[in-house]
Image (cartoon, rainbow, N blue to C red; front, side, top):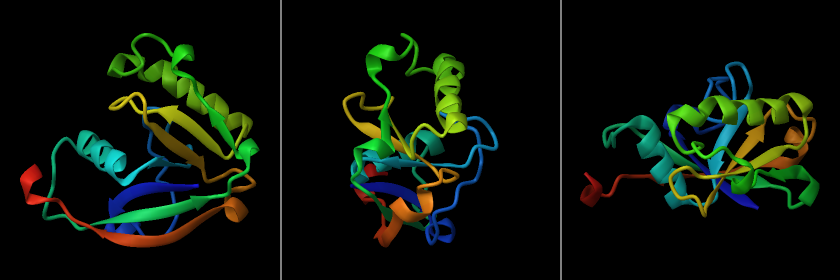
Length: 150
């Protein structure tokens, strides 16, 4: 399976995590947030950056994850609290993601996007024992902002 991550050029050459807290993890947990498509990853970037920054250089990271079913745990929308798409839902989602991370349940957590609920983001645990052998940075691609978006 291929997933996508849009990163600043300086961070796009390796599969390393910052340990920053986000919707599905707490501070110090080494995870990579990726999207199921380049377009979803673009929307996620805009939402999380708060604006389009056309003067910043970005790259699309194309990441391959082995196609073994046991590597992925999916979170069902029906198992999420009603407020999961809002900031108020973060504590519950952090709890779900942190428990998954700490138990090393799987290499990847498949979660619905809060932007487009019928599409998915894939959170990769870079500390999982299978990370080194089952995840690979295939290539990077130039990324640009279409001027019609600005």
